[in-house]
Image 1: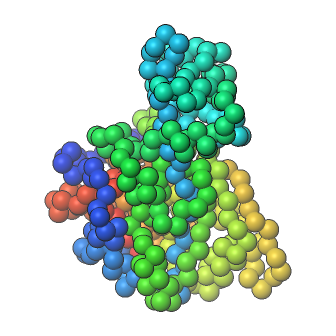
Image 2 (image 1 turned 90 degrees about the vertical axis):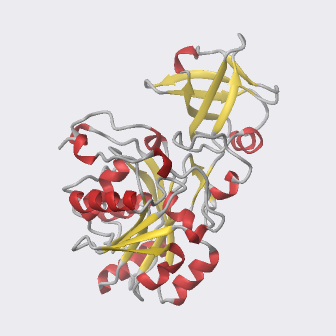
Image 3 (image 1 turned 45 degrees about the vertical axis):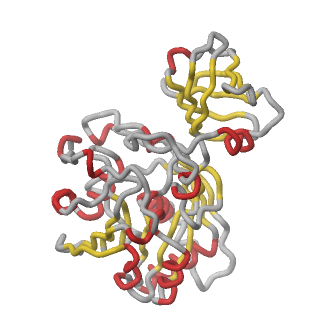
Length: 351
């Protein structure tokens, strides 16, 4: 299987550059998974498309202001995109330009508020960095970091991005990109979803380096995703296990949730979460699960997701869930109907 089969044409004018004032005003393409038939709706109407008894699962990972700008002693400017916080003092980062980084050198912020030292290269793309000031990584990021907007958003981050490039249920720091399907929710919409008789629970998957990198190989099967950390609490495990046992639908809000839930199923974590049994342990770990056409879903029954970049691992996951031909047909329709694409864009519900 080759990546060329997962390409499509998108006019640049359809790439959303800013969020809508009302999160729930985004458009929603509602797709029948079996037939590929679709209709056009608005995200604020989501509750009416869910079935009482469904379990809606969101990702409550919080985006960190992961982009730092520093200078070498020679004056050269370097951008550090934090990919993982290792402890209070050290982190890994993508450096741009990477070739200018010298191991052992000190890098200072332009205003001199903080400094750090390059400790080691981590593969071809990352560098491990240690702070040389008496502050934690998160303190430095909160004070001096910029929101890591994706490169297809052709503007610098603005103060409102700190709130809008964040879901309303985000509470655990760790992501360097937003789980964008969750950006459309408000507390009021979640309340209406619950009033519909839908359970709402959460997992955590910290979106990492893989989001920013293209797939390395044209032959899909040769690719491997970077591992990302996740956690699921015992209550969520039991809720999902009960839904599966009773034939109720599990709705993944985003590809990140889909990967967590499918990882949990593949590792037998739901088998150990018998709702009639005693306490089940919380689960934490890492997943590098790469889902592409041919994968058989065992946990996720419905998927809410934004429209994704061509030739990306996220698009491949959607194609695996809906079918490649049906997915690309929906994308073509979204282009014709001038949907807004990517992180700040519109969404689809596949059910």
